[in-house]
Amino acid sequence: MVKNPAILKKFEDEFLKSEARLSFEQSLNIFTSLWNEAAMLGVMPPKDPLDQIEVDVKIARALNTCSRNSLHG
Image (cartoon, rainbow, N blue to C red):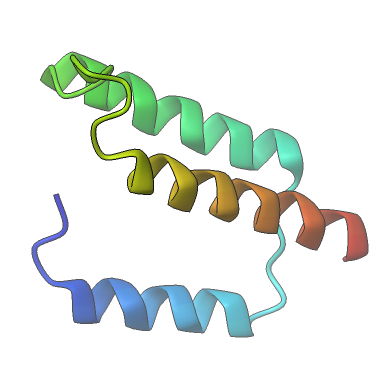
């Protein structure tokens, strides 16, 4: 859970401005780790897979952006 979205936004902006690029494998490892942590906390997978579908779309967009950036960097 993000407790201070302004700090997260600042971090994301600074990270994207830096030329640090993640490979697809690095991105997938991060995603997998976050998924496993969410599963341990009991919040993933959701009881209703279509509940909060907007979140799934945002995750897919983020992963697609990471893979596109790693191809062009």
